[in-house]
Length: 176
Ligand code: HEM
Image 1: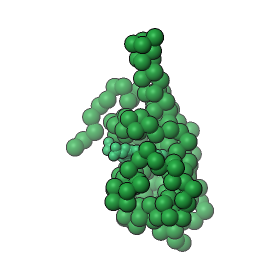
Image 2 (image 1 turned 45 degrees about the vertical axis):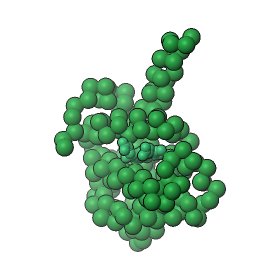
Image 3 (image 1 turned 90 degrees about the vertical axis):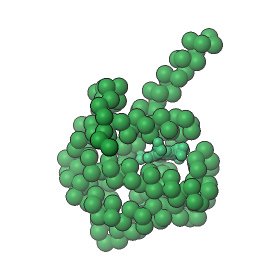
Image 4 (image 1 turned 30 degrees about the vertical axis):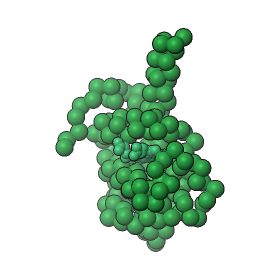
């Protein structure tokens, strides 16, 4: 289904971080997005393994997610990875993803995802990519994907902050 125009999600403030991305990063991410996508399932599996088996100290970051249950966890890691690839493929025209960003940000707020969880997920995802891509994961490629992940994480963090704020205002207006 084609993305529909969403006036709220397209407000300039929502995507301002995009302009700060280095053009070289955009070029590398776009050119490596197909191979990363092709290996998507392996990357997801590896990410799950890293998050749950190799870094048990990270488990507390996933307590509000379905990741605790292996089957659901793999599904969720797969959804997350798929949206990172969608983002990478559209990295120079992010307005196409506005509806998806809006939907995911709302899912995150509903499950009380907080900013501090993003670097943990990012570390697991990037470590998985590095392992699965092997030699193709040059330092330049990894640096570009790190910048891209951080950029995407910031888009979510900013939008989620706004939604939390809106909810708080509504709560205050209702209950003082
Ligand atoms: C850039 C990073 C992230 C991306 C691309 C991403 C992507 C997604 C996607 C695609 C969904 C499904 C939305 C839907 O079904 O409508 C989702 C839901 C969710 N994500 Fe994320 N996510 C990210 C970061 C995080 C982080 C840091 C956490 C917390 C550790 C998290 C926890 C969740 C939870 C709890 C849900 C709801 C699951 C459900 O209701 O089934 N996500 N995310």
